Length: 583
Image 1 (tube, helix red, strand yellow):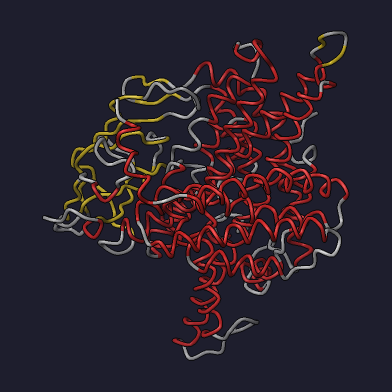
Image 2 (image 1 turned 90 degrees about the vertical axis):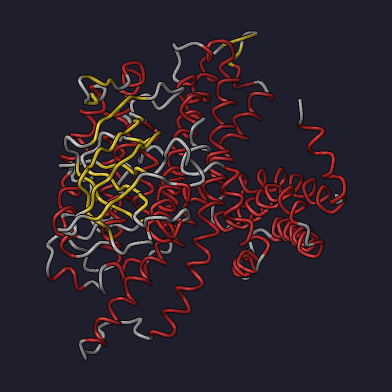
C-alpha cells in the first residue's frame, strides 16, 4: 500500500512545524463558523486533525490510484476529436476520484461548498498529487482560478460559479498567453468589446493555454480602445460555448496528460471580473502568484518521485558484486538530492505560510471595515485597523519576495534532481522502461511556465537589494538556535557575504551590473534563507541536524563563490557580453 503522506516523514513534520494558530483562527472567523457548518473546526486542534485526515486521504488517492495510472496517461496524452479535447482515461478517472473526495474547492469558503483550508495545506495536497502525476495537477491544481473569482468578483458572480468549481462540475483555465504576448503580458491584443446589455464579447487568439478545454476560463483581454499598455487590460470570465474554437493541441516534451491548447475566440460572450483596467495590474498578478506557488509544489512533487525512483534503483542494481547504493559516489548523489528536496520544501512552506498570513489579514481588515460601516463592534481579536494594515503591508512585501524565490528554488531543484536521478539509473534511465525519463521530461517545464526562472529573478531582486529580505533574516537570526551554534555562525557568515555583495551592487548603481549579477544574488538569498530554515528544523531533530550540516557545507561554499564574483566584478567588463554571445 502506498500513501504519499504517510510515507513522507518530512512532509508530515512540516505540517506539525507550521505555525498555523493565527491563520486558522482568522480563517475560521474566531471559530464562529462552527455554528453554521457542521464540519467547521471548533479550535486549532480540531482544525489540525481535519487537515491531517484530509492529507491522509489525498496521500492514499495519490499513491494507490493516481500514480499507477501515470505511465499510461503519459503515453496516451490528450486528443483533439471534432473540436473537443479527450483526456487520457486515467485523467478522467483520477479527477472523478478527487471529486468524490470533495477536494475540488480546497481553499474556497464553505458557503460555496469549499473546504476553507489554508494555502499551506492546499500546497501539500498539490505536492502529493504532483508526485503521483504532475499532468493531473495541471487540471486539478487550477483552483486558483476559482480563488481569483472569490477574491475579486461580485457576489452575484461568486454565487453563480464558485459552487460549480467546488463540486468539480467544471474545470478552468487561465487564458493569458498569446502568440505575441508570452512573458510580456502588457502586449495582449485579444479584444473585449462591451455590449449595450453590459455583457462583453471577446475576439482573438490565445496560445499555450493549459487545460484550455476547461468549461470556465479567466481571460485577459484589451477592453480599452486605443490603449497599448497594461492599463487597457481587464479580466473576464468566459464559459465554453460555440463561440470559442480549440484550434490545436500542442505536441509537448512532457506533462502529456495535460492538454495545452490554442484557442480562437469569435464574438464569445464573457463577464467582466471586478473593475475595468485592473486585469493585469491587480488580478493577473494575484492569479500568477498563486499559480507560481502551485508550480513550485508541482516541482517539489516531481523531485520527490525522481529521488525515490533513484534510491530504489540504486538499492536493486548490483554491479561489482554489490548494490550501487554502496558506492560513495552514488551515496553522495542521493544525499544531494534528498537534502536539496528538504531545503526547497522548507522554503516552499515558509512561503505558503507568508501568503496565508497576508490573505487572512486582508480577510480580517474587510471584516472590521464592514463592521465599522454597519456601526457594529467587531467580534474577536485583531480589530485594530492600523495594526492590521501595518501587518498587511509587511506581509504583502514578503509574499512578493518569497513567491518568486520559492518558484525559482523548487523548479531549478526539481530539474537537477531529475537529472541526477537519471544519472543514477545510467543507460536504463534513458529508456521508457523506467519512470525517471518521464520525471525528467515533466520537470523541464516547471522552470519555464508561470514565469521563467529569469522572470522570478526580476520579481525578487528588488526585495533582495532592498530592506525586505534583510528584515526577514533579522527575524530568523533572533530565533533560538542554541542546539546549533557552530552552524549558526556559518550561516551568519554567509549572510554577511550576501550583504557585502548587495551593498556593492547598490553602491555602483549600474543597471547592467545589477542585471548581470541579479540571479547570483537571488540564489545567494535562497541559500541563506534555506540555511536558517534548515537550522530551525534541526533544533530538536537528529536527522534534520545531519541534513542541516550537509546543506550548510554546500551552501557556504556556493555563497562564498558567488560573493567573490560580485565583489571582484567591474561594470566595464560587461562590454564584452555582446561579442562573447554572438555567432
